[in-house]
Length: 281
Length: 339
Ligand code: SF4
Ligand code: SF4
Ligand code: SF4
Ligand code: SF4
Image (tube, rainbow over all chains, first blue to last red; front, side, top):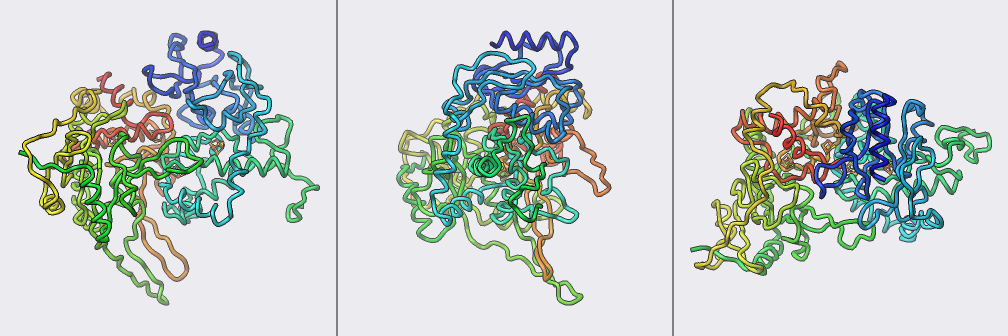
């Protein structure tokens, strides 16, 4: 599969179909895979693909340091690919200008990450080129999708608040959760607005609650559940749990899962006379 | 001759300090028992009971001890609106003595390095007061990982800088105790036993690059063409700076309402776009590669030129905690090889 991937990328670069490929590479065998940007056909041997390719590379489609490389091809796993669809729906990318290389994925991490345990997109579905074949079936995985949040919601509200206070008090406001998130593409995040300050910049419990509540609101109905924020957080905060509750609300109330169905209207971008909230009609 | 202390006795000491009402910080697994955790998270935290303390079994904590002298949020003074007048209310300086136990040498050395900048053109009374109130008991590292590179930057598992007491593992149950300052002697007085046994100083990680090669690259000019490619994957977050024991940038903001508020300082990080944004809208470091270049130059050229010491102890935290496994080490290795 790796040969096929390298061949594909070599061809794309040789033919001039793209100027750079965003993929995974690593310096030495024990290292985790890191994002690499390959511009020369002779460099494609740097590319790797295995279960330590964690990063959701679609984030780089909003980084000017990468866009400046020219026309791009990008490697995506099934879960990463969902972000592409949301970015397209939100007019952030011109899909026709990007070559999407889908990587068949059996899951990442040893043991597998939580998102992989309930993954139902092992095979990318809308890629221009798909490399490999996933061996893990999608069937039934969806049933477990919200297991963690359902378990969590059985706890009392007081208990849950105590949990979040304990967790969020560790947040240092490094904004790694925002910077890795493909959906956080704003040129100026609301927490960076300083004339006047909108959201406290202090990493106190109060300031951290304000930050994470803001983040959750802005990602409701948009978060694709790639769990990159959770992986990035140096304070070990399980942001996945918050995201799951957003995803659950979107699916239960609107039958919508961000980045799954190209024909579905994004719930945040759509308006309906049938909306059951009066204030919106 | 040496002074020895059994591991169970250091635990007993910590218990006594806590019982006497002293503030003690040390490594602790902060997510033990959390059903949602994926891996153990070891952080320096204020201990409430001695059982929380975890001295070894890991390389180093995810956060750093700079927080005990330079908290991420600090009130500098308050203000109150009194009619047309504004009244300033001084913030109270800390008074509680504090002890850090089980600090890693790369953390302790960082405080020594920071003393210079916090006492340069301006003597920072908050930092200095906390520093005076703090006694640091460091544990020499018997473990290191692929991210550690202390030995490449003149530091190491037995670095004495910044420590008041250095504990060197003798065997599984005992430490050799080296009191390096008066504060350290006071803290350990009467607790140790004299012996003829001495501990072997642990070896650190292998050298990852040479300072000469690095210095050559940095001295060869500011606008080297290598920067964009070497730093392209950086996402511009603050994970590296906020888990770095030597990073010390802060931002000053006013927080308050209609009746008054406070002027506070919060940590800031050089990789944020906003870090150098001017009020005019111009940003002299508008590209991530310029911000990364600044980070490396500041740590490995500007700071040493000014204060005589590198602004890095090789703790590896910036790479360990980077979402794309960058931080300074891969950059240093690449540019040192290119000089
Ligand atoms: S919020 Fe987290 S899980 Fe959701 S899209 Fe962003 S990085 Fe991925
Ligand atoms: S990554 Fe974690 S510590 Fe950093 S801002 Fe987000 S929640 Fe806070
Ligand atoms: S080097 Fe890594 S941790 Fe530092 S700003 Fe860049 S992405 Fe964040
Ligand atoms: S720059 Fe990186 S390795 Fe150096 S002290 Fe800071 S976190 Fe540690």
